[in-house]
Length: 127
Image (tube, rainbow, N blue to C red; front, side, top):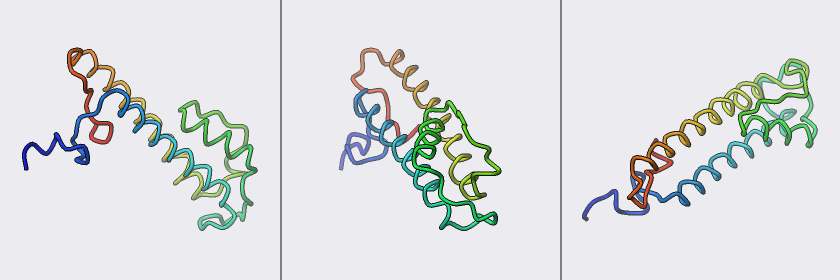
């Protein structure tokens, strides 16, 4: 069996900077896609007592990118555009995840200085 952390498919396996960066981009991309989908499907989702329709595609993409990048720029009034589920499961969750991603980048930066002679900087999935 050997050391489990040496296996690439193990969650504790070390990653180089490229693997770490790709994992981070994939994680942010999944969050962005989920938030976009929630906004576009809002009219079909529960917890929408005001029966708001789907958010326009351009506004949904703008909002998803904004919250995924932690800039949180809004060009709408939340209580007149977004249902409760969209605000809770979409906007609030993405606000937390984008900040957590920033912390993960900070940890990677510290690790890169501490491990300057190592080819790895840890594992994005095990922060």
